[in-house]
Image 1 (cartoon, rainbow over the protein chains, first blue to last red):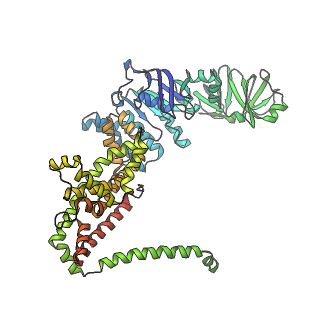
Image 2 (cartoon, one colour):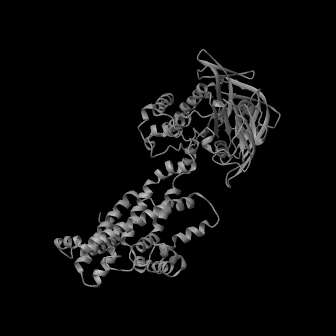
Image 3 (cartoon, each protein chain N blue to C red):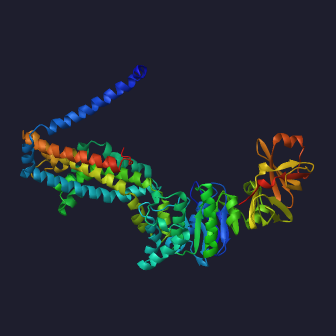
Length: 347
Length: 266
């Protein structure tokens, strides 16, 4: 368990302010926040790169506030991988093992195992400069976990990758966590990643922790306007899906959403807020999803208006300023939301 | 076709000037190299005096280059990585030898080592810099350290400190992280800096003349030899020294362009 108590650090442009956070051993902990929120410094403080100006950091009860990084047994993977360009993949992965004076044949075995798990075994003799982004990230993660650290810190590990690679790697991170049970702290600005991977999460803004909780909790009950606006960008829901006659039925919080994507089991679905039709009366149409609820919140987004409607779960819908005016929408009035089954996407 | 030709008058004029300039430089080099015959050149190069000059030049420039590397690495690292009080001032002061005429630098060194109690203490301890080969090394070091320092500072600035951070989380001390990661990554900069410092050292004349003097077979490096032999009409020996200096300069320039093109010197 990593426990951070009242930690502050000022690096000028970036800073932490009185951060208190407990990260359970073995959990997949997500830190969500906009650019400049102090997420990377938080990781660097945990890793020991920067010593806090104030506060205390403990790892499994041991005070590591002033311990140098090498004595913490916590690995970190930066967004841009930081693979040593003068060493090939094998030597990059062996770097930490050699420093720990592990015998050569044991190093070889460990590299063999980890590169097979991470699917980079065929790259051992390549240099980082010749690898793709996804390959670099796998090698960087291999290098970080081959030393069997107590925690793995990931700084936006998926942001620099293309959509397809990102999805594959996200699933692999999930698998890696399930198989190794290593504590992972994963920094991101994407709520999609939080939902797909996190057991628990913290939202950061301006160097402070704004909210801590389970992802669905934070999403359902944001404790401030900042969190609501930041996480409420998309309609993301966690539920249980069953496939029936070529369509999926996703049950969540008492309502049932229909999707044309055939997937079953625990899933996360998303509906783009632009794809939701808002009406005051129920519309008869071919769209399979229609829900009734009260307008909970109205956010002016300039040329468009975002309304949040509580239908058991909070839906965000974006409409034009003109329709907003024409329909005379107000907080608290009842509206119908309609969207097509093909607009419900699985993550 | 004709129209395009007309339109690019500025192109023709500017290219003409660049060709003229290149020709001017080339002609000088050719004049030196073709001034004597090849057998005469070889005889001169093999003469005792010239062999002494070559040897002294190689030794002094090699030592001064190593000194420049040793001193520049921590200095450049500090100024690339850390913010501290007086950093800008130090950066400016470190550039001064670059702007100073070497003769003036030599006078300063001569006064420091020849007249102050600091210089006298060193001389009493056996380190005599005035009119000795040691003086050549110091003069080369003083004049050339800005080149090494600036190249290395640029190199270190270009290496993300996060490489060291990662190395530390993997088990390195700060020093190990520098030694195993940053320094190998700075390889090209180090090579480029060494080459330019060394070739500048070989050609160093003004400051070395002031501090170490021009004594035949004692402080006679290649440029000093060129100067001495030119003054007393030994044209063949002078040309031999000049030819060797040309070869070294061109070779260094080639290597520098190949490996150090990225490093900002000025």
